[in-house]
Image 1: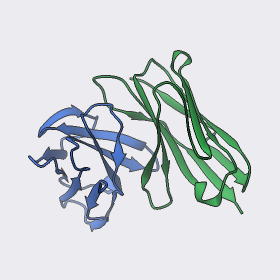
Image 2: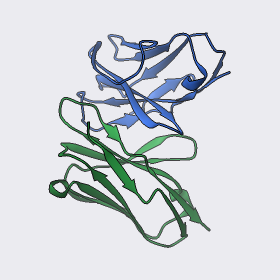
Image 3: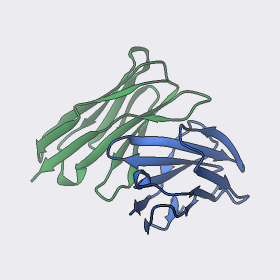
Length: 113
Length: 108
């Protein structure tokens, strides 16, 4: 069974631009969670989507948003990029949502200049 | 919210040595996972272990939920074991919370 995939793997953007990242979960998994990883803050939860509905949200500004499609693929969007948004963005899928066992994708490394 | 601590923050070993990594959490949890993050950033599942003991090859893990800690044992370490080890804890109705990680370097 194929693992979690994320595209693109690397991205360089300029301050003020917006960016969209994509995540395809393991086949059959209905939940996708997004995390931001930075050297200073560690791994922080952004939000979780289950059956196209946002179930849980972390403590991030409204510039960070997401959605999930009927095939469980998810996208996250960051508008008006700031230098501090430079990070590794990881998505994780699990079968039934919440705190069931999570499986992570390879991540998208975003650099904002 | 729940707090997660990991110790030690950094660990340097010679190849072949054994090690124990610890994860402490501040409140009761329903689930716990251990991950290994390789140098390319990929988080690899090691154990899903809300309680009890599990073993997988040279690695084993024990979670004592009543005392709010989990241990990850690595025996006969190899250079490929290098990376950062994270524990993540979860409570029903909430998201997983990650610890700060233990950075392991295994020297040849």
